[in-house]
Image: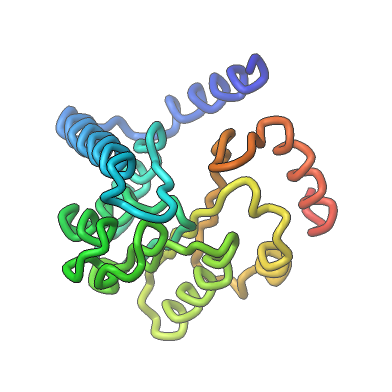
Length: 219
């Protein structure tokens, strides 16, 4: 934790001198969005305990600042996003109606995937949010494919592809990085959840990162 605190201070000092200042309105918008998203996830937890939401339920509590920051920097008229199975908040940040997401979680036909996808498979072509993927690492090559389509059709768009710490061991991620995406505009973001659904990864992260970098010829 001491090392992480020092790293944070270094980055904070760097961004303070390089980033432009945000207006009061932006900060209030972030606060409003993140508060709403937290309450949405809290409600999901309540409904899950009442067995109104079935199957797996992966909540996003404590990570609301990530989609808030990304969508502020994105051009939502053309940029796209794809992620793994912890995917309730991202589509809301991209503009999807929260009611449709809740309907999907409850298995309703009015949901984003007609009630057939559930917690891990939120989808909206209209808002360029392409999942929500239950297969660990499944979104990684799809993100590259979306970026390739953007390049092929000259959309001048960027794809944001989220992944989690445990996906670092996936061969598909290594192959995508080794191929250098053929200069595709895709931003890969790895999130350390520290405590995913079944196992703590705090002590595992360093070893995973070392093995991944060694196997992928990354410094």
